[in-house]
Length: 142
Image (cartoon, rainbow, N blue to C red; front, top):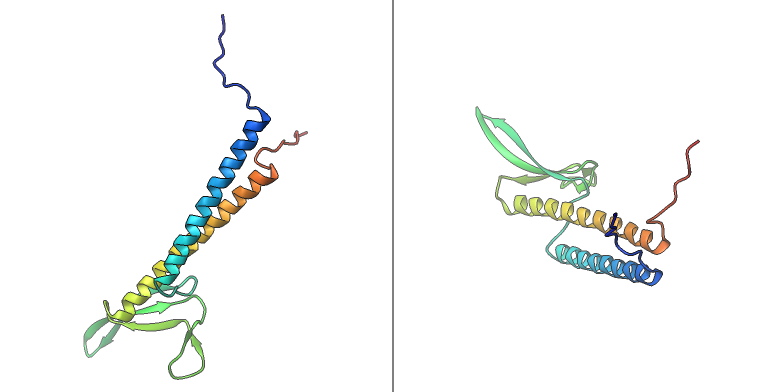
């Protein structure tokens, strides 16, 4: 004798309640992420997109000196001596306030970008739930 312990088939009303509950959980998560992003922006500036802190060496009088710069993939920083833009912003020695501020701005940019990517992914989830495209029929291949 064969006994099936399968779950009963969900009724349409249960399915709608499930969709609504999942939709609301995603909306709450997006709201929480947006609050986190707002808090992050209050902590300070964001570095330019794609910027990083680079270490470089200067040799002078048989000595080596290490300095840091904030570097962007395209000219972004105002030059001190002209109206041109530069890819680099000199930060000085390790641990200076300018160096630490730049490190933290790069950190905030990466966290902000990741939060934004997650929000976009969750927005796609909301579209899937609301449009009914979570479950699609496949066309048979010939």
